[in-house]
Image 1 (cartoon, rainbow, N blue to C red):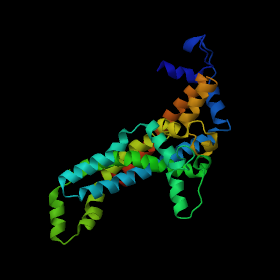
Image 2 (tube, rainbow, N blue to C red):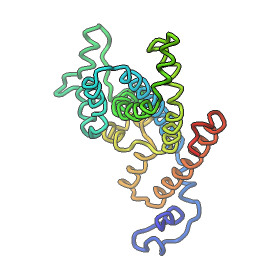
Image 3 (cartoon, rainbow, N blue to C red):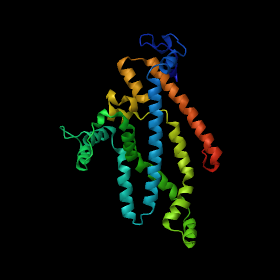
Image 4 (cartoon, one colour):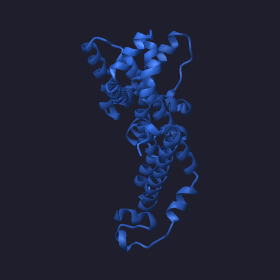
Amino acid sequence: MAGLVVAFKDFNVRDGIFGSPWNGFANFRYFLTSGDAVTIIVNTLFLNALFLSASLLAGLILALMLNEIRGSLYRRFMQSTIFFPYFVSPIVISIMLQVILSGVGGSGGALNNLLSVIDLPQLSWYTEPGAWPWILTIVKVWQLGGYTSVIFLAAITAISEEVYEAAAIDGASRARMALSITTPLLLPTLGVLLVLGVGRIFFGDFATIYAIVQDNGILFPTTDVIDTYVFRSLRTIGDFGTTAAIGLFQSVVGFFFVTAAVLVQRRFHKESSIL
């Protein structure tokens, strides 16, 4: 907790945390009035909203599909296959993406080679900032879709078989059961995952984004988030006070976001509320 004091001080290493002079909210004011604040805050919220919604939707769809697989061996194989990307290092993901988008030794990349086959123009992907929110979203879905589906599958196992048997007697198809029984009963789990995700919506995925984008300033307008900005600030100017203020700002705003999410959840679906 003593580290939080740095956010309100003109910190210098020589005087230490308690010896450095107080400067009130100057560190917060410096960040919020800087030219980069609006861009990185919007990027953080927009990218996290994309990541959260896409990964939850992908996980739900994958769970419903896996639940329909009858062969237990094949089902376990598919679960392991789609869960594996969760353990892949961001550095490995970055290398894989470079091979796909730009290739090795000027080959143009697998994606550009595919575009040329179907007579579409090739792109220099690492100079196209507008494409990167969607590229990063695809990466996060690939990385988190399987992990999220396992959580939904665990929730599906808690649904009573009697419900499905009654629906089968009424002539419901497997697709109808998935849409009208399984999906509604997964709403409490979806609500919990949504609240947990909203609690982190003000924190950028530093490891993945920095490993992929690195210091490519061309892509900063759409990919630079609060955490990568803080890292660059520490690396270049060593401003501990401002970076501590940004971290505290993230935590406080994140608290209000998760509180609002819980209140909305209780208002519209009290049964699935975590509080």
